[in-house]
Length: 261
Ligand code: F6R
Image 1: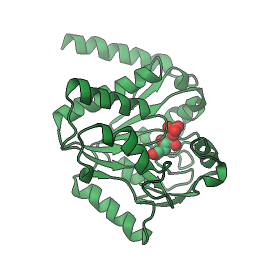
Image 2: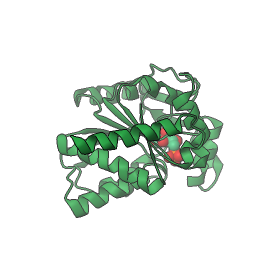
Image 3: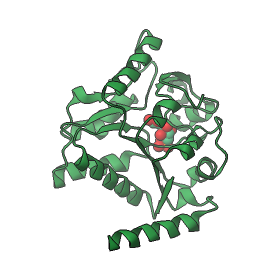
Image 4: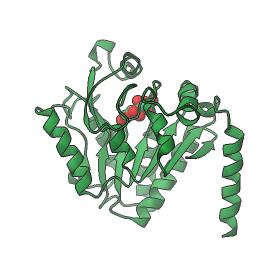
């Protein structure tokens, strides 16, 4: 895992956008895995800026979102459909037919989830997956105890997740208790992954996920065995990492090396 530590939220958003742009220029029909929540907002804002000011095109990009609340319609203001349209899709030149978000109103959920996996496979798999991390270590909505080989399915949300996400709803009772989420196995099949985290309240879980043992109790810890993960984290989110100085030393070395080639 490559650990990149930046000063603050703005800097991690810019760094992540820089990587996305680089991959997009290499492969214009990139298959992007997308996350919602507070963390990737800055990244999406920066991608919108790059589209407007630098002509970065998303015309051929295909996207698959990690998850959606079960029971929310796409036009519900707290649905992840709504979030993606408002914060990214409506502001870039992406073809909406190439975007995929689990359907929160899917009827035959088992069949629907299998089809979602098949669609990812048909596109050739996810080239670059963007991830945030929950305070209980979840990626997507793969709560503690999720199988590390799990695929897209319906999951019950942890109390902590419901509490954390209640900030987006009028009251905690409105927060859905279920979500359709791609699995840990689905995420691990991505060719490359960017893990983003910002702020003090993520410091404890980031230390466990990156430097602790691999365990289904912290599903993000499985990222340690993925060959191509870039963790882009701000100072606050890295305050509990034991090997922080080493990561910074490596990063400096990479910069110097790049200057000479
Ligand atoms: C959202 C998702 C979640 C979030 C996580 C962190 O699509 O998959 O795993 O990334 O809950 O959320 P924030 O960024 O709001 O702290």
